Image (tube, rainbow, N blue to C red; front, side, top):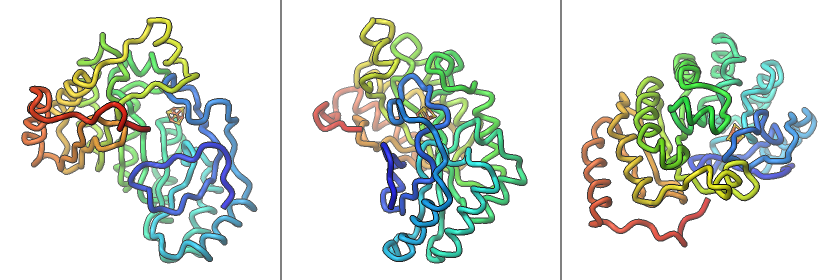
Length: 289
Ligand code: SF4
């Protein structure tokens, strides 16, 4: 397979065939993100993508899922993306689901009919980075969309048949807006009603604008217990019809896996026990990105 630069994928795609169809991220401006910094966004050539699909047809026969890397493969023009999906279906017939990252911009650019066509061709799950539902924080981190747009685009993905996984970032609002961030994110998650929510804990990445803000004293990094208090408020304000809320990423201090709405109360109790010091949090040295 031809891989260039940093290859990232959601934790749930760990066993998927990682097919890199773009290099970098078309936005590449979020202040906390260092994944594709310095990388010029481009779509890989049809010849390279075709060669990788042919390779997977030979060597990846036991993997049932494909994940389209990098940052936001949904930004690929419709005709080319349909070609990639058709090629996957024709050459990897054992694959049951294709996934990709999507952002508000790429979802906005696709019509409902286009999204349905992609869905019919096998694209089954989209991963959207919300980070926060707080408009002020969204503007501060330069996410490129406000909360209303995030809700509209998340719902658009759901209404056109996609499974939707939304990522939120504990600590991203700093200390001054921590609880506002938690409440507003719960409100936005409730409005989107995704299938999955993944809560990650912020880790500062060297070289990013957020790291520079931290060093200059313009951004405050909250403590593990404050992150947990933020998570508690977020979950308390989140009502999903049947989604899975998890905070089990390696960077999190307390692993959480809650099927909503049935596990909501017990999860809040678990967090309360941890906040009261009756459950030990993951030590700092065991955290990783
Ligand atoms: S957070 Fe996502 S959209 Fe923002 S720069 Fe990083 S990869 Fe791109």
